[in-house]
Image (tube, rainbow, N blue to C red):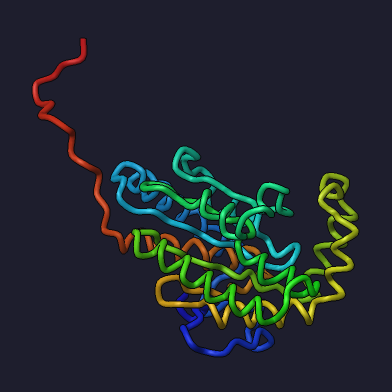
Amino acid sequence: MERYKVTSGTSVDLSQWDPRDTGDFDGGKKDGQKEVGKLNKELEELQEMLYAEHKHKVLIVLQGMDTAGKDGVIRRVFEGVNPQGVKVASFKVPTAEELSRDYLWRIHKMVPGKGEIVIFNRSHYEDVLVVRVHGMVSPELCRRRYREIVDFERMLADNGTLILKFYLNISLEEQKERLQARLDDPQKIWKFNPGDLGERKLWPDYMQAYEEAIEATSTGFAPWYIIPSDRKWYRDLVIATLLVKSLKDFKMSFPPPEENLDGIVIE
């Protein structure tokens, strides 16, 4: 799965990353979903150990175009995981209070503490993506923000936070099918936003903005992964695999009791 990692200092051309790729996986959809289920069980155990050990912090950043599957990843990859140690933070249009401060203020408040996994469903990268595409900030300001974001993430990493950033890479054609499916499904039509059609017309501009942001901010301590996401099951498989491997690398263990409990009998 390391094939999807963007090495620091390399250029990014999203047109060269196949959103329908399934890597070296030999099976199909059902096989992939079965593997995700197995990984989910492992993740449950690892998350419990992470929470109990209370040493490490994990930040997961999910970015992608509309319908890329950010909500789907959260539902499927973290299904059954104890919500006590996993939090989801979504960042919408900034409030008046947030706008009166620097753009990272609202982000810093939501980063994980020890023993926690925090998932950013959209993130601080909105401040170099949407605003860039819509001409609300200059390219020069974006480049300054790239440097600030790298410094911010370096500070988090230096203080014990594992950072995994996933760009959910879908094709324009796949987005069309998913938007139409929302319109056609009475139980999903509430998710359809007519404004998404306007954003869809800006696809080339968004691709350029993502390429520049990923190039500038993929580092050894906070790497970007470009995840093939046209096939939902494979998207989930890649992210679950990378997350489980990263947690195993902590080499965690459950902490011993605070005192000797031998001989205690509950009556």
